[in-house]
Length: 168
Image 1 (tube, rainbow, N blue to C red):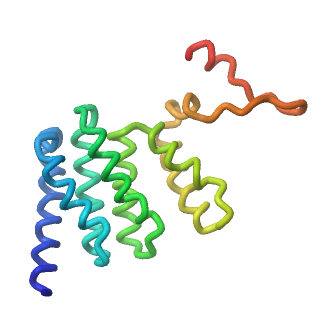
Image 2 (image 1 turned 60 degrees about the vertical axis):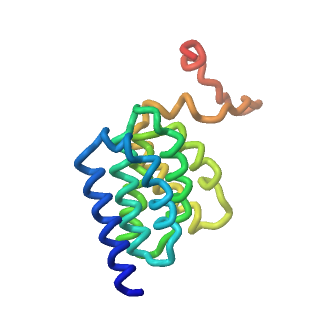
């Protein structure tokens, strides 16, 4: 049984390196390896999740703009629950995978995932969501204002973004 775990880790590591180097040719393999990555991302073993997250990062960056957004969204849905992980190595791999999905899907899609948790009642949840939001903001701030929710103005505050509405 231990040998099977080592084989699985080796296969995941190989996929990660392969997608790092083949780039856009990953388009030919994304649908074939998605079930394998999905299984690894929900595995109990943290090393499986870490290595699979690394493969998702390389794969999602490689297929950017090639029409594989459905598979990248599916992989992001599998990566997303791991944002609350405790292990530093898994956290780094998951954050890299989320950033890879930001590149592959665009910051607006990621913002839609983030809005639900930015004002969550639990501080631990808010901290993780704000960390991801800050990374998205630093990397893609020009793309975000168009995706911010519209808030009606009130007696004391004006929330309208007139210049943006002229362009939209």
